[in-house]
Length: 93
Image (cartoon, rainbow, N blue to C red; front, side, top):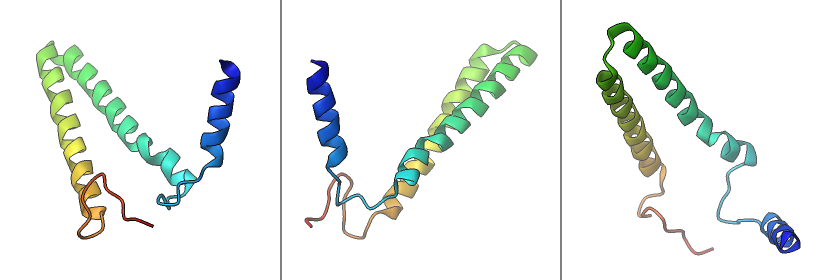
């Protein structure tokens, strides 16, 4: 089973995605912005809970900040697409 997994990983590594022109460094760095925002919001929410003794306010702020951030990312990703291209589709190459 380990050999099959290793061969599958090797095959996946060897195959290049010609439609994806992003650099590996860009692909690997994409999630860090979201992770940083998540940690800042969690720490700020913890401070609010400690200072005000209002855990429901911290939960609401966490949800609100996360929602705003995700909606901004979604809008940015949609405007970055090529004109006439819908999400999830690729042009034949």
